Image (cartoon, rainbow over all chains, first blue to last red):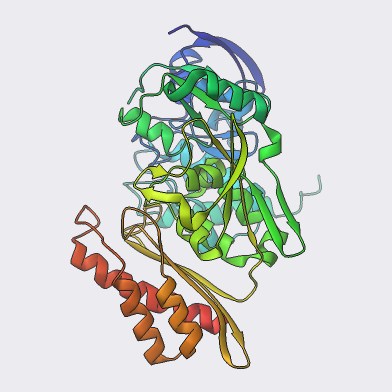
Length: 162
Length: 284
C-alpha cells in the first residue's frame, strides 16, 4: 500500500514524513519522529499512556491513524516542559509522589494539562472523572489527584510581582 | 495491533463523500471518530480496503435548535454534546448519556453519528434515540431519506442503512420533562452491563408522556412501548413502576458474556430501570 506524505506540527515544530495509511499516530511519533514521551501501553484505547493533545483535544494516539492528523497541531509531554524547566504539573507530580514507575505519567500529565485548561478550578471529583481515561497501576491515583489539585492551585495564584 | 491495509480518502464535502462511497462500493467504510472502527480494524473484525474519513465535512458538525426541534450533525462529538448549553436546555438527557460513554479522550473523538450508525448493541446513543423517538437522515446515491430510530436497528451491526448511504443527521423534539440515563458498568469507560433511558412528563392528571428504552440487553436497543404506555395509563406509582419493569424485562434477551451471566444481567436491568424511572419522575 503506497505511503502518503504527512505534515504534522508537533510541539510547535513542523515535521514532514511518509507513512502508510494504516500506521497509527503513536507509531509515527515514536518511531519516525523519535518523540518518545507518549508511550504505548495497551494499544487498545483503554490505558491513555499514548495521550497527546490535538487541536485542543486529549486524544489516544493509538486510536488515530497518522494520516488523520495531517496538518494538525499536536502537543506531547515534550511540549509542556523539559528537565531544565518543568511544567507546574511535572513539579507537582514530583512533589506529591504522583508517579512510581512513571510509565503512565506522560499521558497522565498531558491529559491533566487539558483538563486544567478547560476547568481551572476542578473539584477532586472533577479531577478523578477528568483523568478516567488514564490508567495507573502503581499509585492508586491518590497522589496523582493530589498533584493535579496542587497544580491547579498554583496555576491560579496571581503572578508574583517581581 | 496493526490493522489491515487500506487506502485513505478525505473528501471535502458530503456529495463528494457519497460519490466516493458509490464508486468504491462495499470495499469501503466511512470513518467518523474511529473509536469503534479502528479497534475493530485492529482485531481484523473489519478489513475495509478504503476508508472515507468525514472529518473535513464541516456541514456535519453543527447542532441546531429551532423552537422545539433539535438537529445534530453526524460528526458532532460526544464532547460537543456535553458542552453545548442550548442542547442541554432543550434535551438534558443527551448530556447525561454522553457523560457515561467511555472516557474523556474517547468523547473528544467519538461522534453521535458513529455511535448510532455502528449498530453495536453496547453503544448508548441508540437506546437514547429510541427514547427520544429520533429520526436519522441517510444520504446515498439516490438522494436523501429518513428512518425512525425505532425502525433502524435490525440485529447486532445490521441496520436499515444501505452500504452506500451515509448517516448525516440525527433529529428529535426537545424534551424538557423528567429524564434519566442510568447505566450499570463494570468500570468507568465500559459498555453497559445494563442501561436504561427514561423520559417522563408530568401533568395535573399524572404522566402525560413516557418513553423507556434499554441498552445492551439484546442484539438491538429495545424500545419498551408497553411499559411506557403503562406509566401513561396508570400514572407513576410503586405498583405501576413494578408493572412497567416487569413488562420491560419481558422484552430483553441478554446473553452470557464477560459482563456476567444472563440471569445477573436481568437482575441488574430491573434495578437500573426502576432507578431510572424514579429518578426521571423526581425530576419531572
